Image (cartoon, rainbow, N blue to C red; front, side):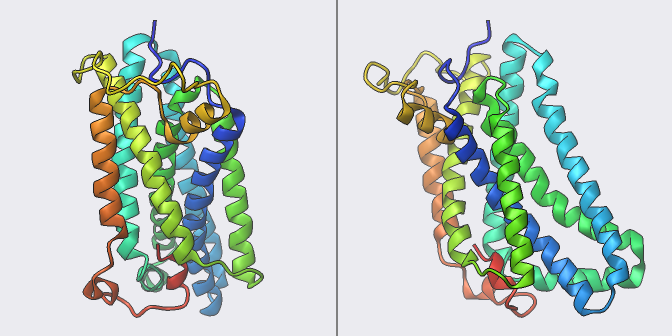
Length: 300
């Protein structure tokens, strides 16, 4: 029988909704800001006829992301035993790699992303509809693939529950509403602060996914040390309690991790948080296009 990498009881509904909702809100806002920049540029350039091509590219990216998520997440439902553990472990590690790269990339790239998108759209307008569709597709698809992989790794410990998906969709809906309100000028959000703290939290979440992936690979003997627990606090830390389900549902915590899981978790959090929170060099901050008011909205 397949060994669950975490407690047999699924995390509470609230924990599943909060964790996945946070992912949906953050990633949805990043995607929404990208779309908002493209739309605002076309409107201000009086090229509204190109909006339909942007919509086509965004729609195609959404379809691709849904297909990736469904293919990995639900395609594995027909796989059982050690094969399922192996797929879950590899998918989790892939999610961690993608998320780490995107978080660190956005740390500096977000400072000039507005100018780069506007310059790219200007060139695409000269080329034609295909270039516009491709630009919108790649800009949105890049964020979407990160979200899909992150959710696959995040939702692996919920034993088939649909609540993480519901939470993700709710977060995306909130992000979409906020994006529209920002475009209309109805709300203002300090995105530098928002993305800094949510980015740090996302790194901790990714560390939990990394630990999950390691446990899964230990289960199939791809990695050693399955029987070597770093500690076991299950005698007093109840995974079925409210705090246990929150820790499990958001951070993939378990009461009896292996030594390798703990070492990987600590090293990942220390190294990636250091790289994420360190000051951006002036040369990198000023490189590329001059900063615009829209750029500050996406700076982590």
